[in-house]
Image 1 (cartoon, helix red, strand yellow):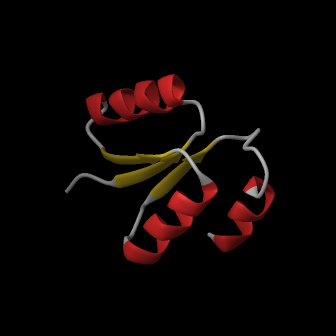
Image 2: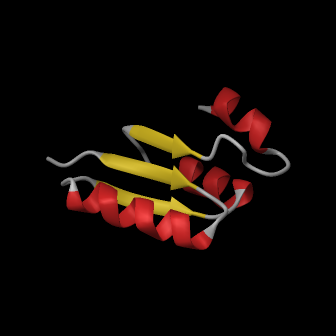
Length: 67
């Protein structure tokens, strides 16, 4: 069973590239571009790993605490 990874990245090109790479590596991937979308995904799904933009704009600093 493939693991599912949530990608949180505000830059569209980088987000799409990460999603492709993760899928090419054999994982399921879901990618979002905002903190609010990430919260929605977390409340409705289960993820094995998270890839989060370290320089996420406003509100991103509290994301790790929610995991």
